Length: 115
Image 1: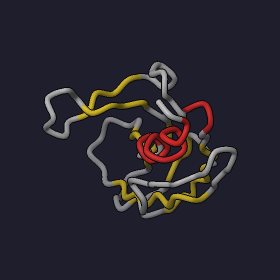
Image 2: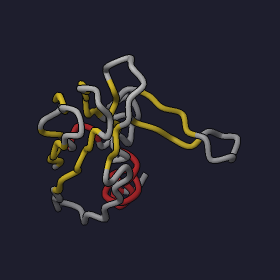
Image 3: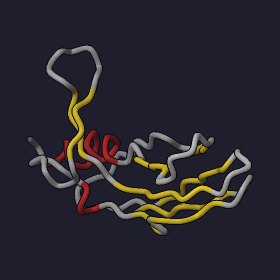
């Protein structure tokens, strides 16, 4: 794949922000940017924030992490996910979240930085 693919489509795919509830309860979590698409030239960098809101009465434990994915061969828009770094075109080593794990109190908000 050409390098420009790494800096465009892949980053948008990987920063598809996989925020996962670690708790098993049915709770409501709102992410202000569940999908972030960035166009970064080779050698460039980008950083930003994601706001995560707990709209429930429960305290929520949250973990932000990366996953690699590709569109399934059926052409129906479904995706096949894999662990970060397993695909040859993965950008996951270049992306980090801070904090990567956190607890949000009822009706609270957490700012997550990505870079």
